[in-house]
Amino acid sequence: MKKIIPLILTVFSMYACGNEKVPPGILDEDKMVEVMIDIHLAEGLVSTFPIHYDSSRALYPMFEKEVFKKHQIPDSVFVKSLEYYMRDARFMDRLYARTIDSLHVIEKAGNKSE
View 1 (cartoon, rainbow, N blue to C red):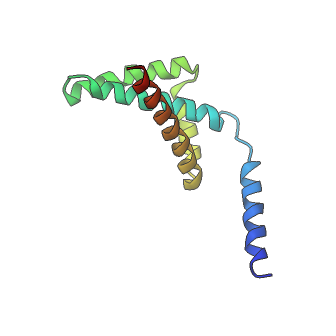
View 2: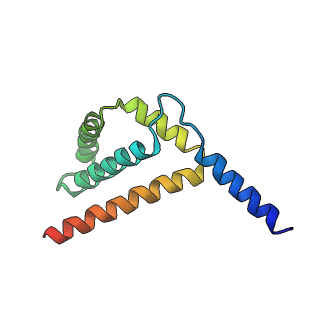
């Protein structure tokens, strides 16, 4: 019986978290991961340019703006969504795990074509 109660609580909490509705104006998990992937790709691209750090800091916002344009979202929606998801560390861990996994897949695909 002592083992069943924690199991039931765990299953219930997982079910409750899975059914949580995203408030209006917040990107859903899949869209958030897509945007985060492109944000990290843009950061990586800018970091490869043979320019000074100050120049790259000035250049990055232009790339970031293109990411938001590609996904047809204002930067304020991304920031608001990031703030919303950062309230739950476990959820952010899951978002970043998905993002990193996708970046690894992209990297492997790029390495195969070389």
